[in-house]
Picture 1 (cartoon, rainbow, N blue to C red):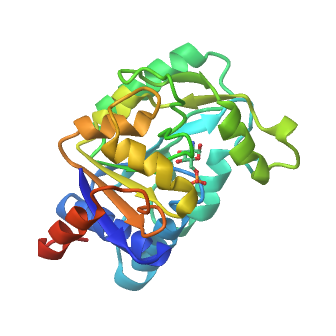
Picture 2: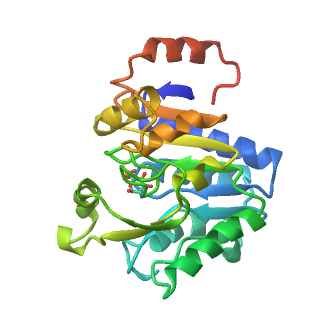
Length: 258
Ligand code: GLP
């Protein structure tokens, strides 16, 4: 995996936005896979800025979000529908019908999951998937022990994830227990992947993902199997990487590093 280390979160976000812009410039009708959480917020702000100041065009873009809480309606402030609308979609010129987010309120999850997978295929597959990483190494809501071949499905959240996400709710009891999430297998089919992480709290999960064994106990480690995956980190998140010197040495020699 290509590893890019930046000094600040702002620089991580700007580098990630340059990767997105590179993909959109090469393919204006690209399909993007998008993530929620605090990590990609800076990326989304930068994309909005590039749209407003530099004319970055989303008019032909399609997006697929990774996941959604089961039971939260689109209007719930903690739903990922709400998050995406407020933090990105309403600020750019993407046609509303081109932005797909898993439903947290369907009455037939099995059918919905199959439809979502088919929709991704019908749209030509994901060109660039943006990912954050959970404190336990999860990508999307693929908690430890998730199959590395998994597809879009319902997943029970791990206790650590519920505790981590409780800060956004009034109390831990309000955090949904289930989520609908793309699988690790779904994610690995994206043509290109960019994993973002910032802050010391992610350092161990990042080190396990990049340098540990490929294991269901850290589903981000499955990205080691991908041919075009990049990880953009700030220095605190890179703090536990054993090969940090090597990555920085390579990065210094890469003319096209974002
Ligand atoms: C949630 C999301 C993940 C995200 C993770 C980390 O669990 N399902 O996609 O990567 O949170 O969130 P944060 O970026 O807020 O640390």
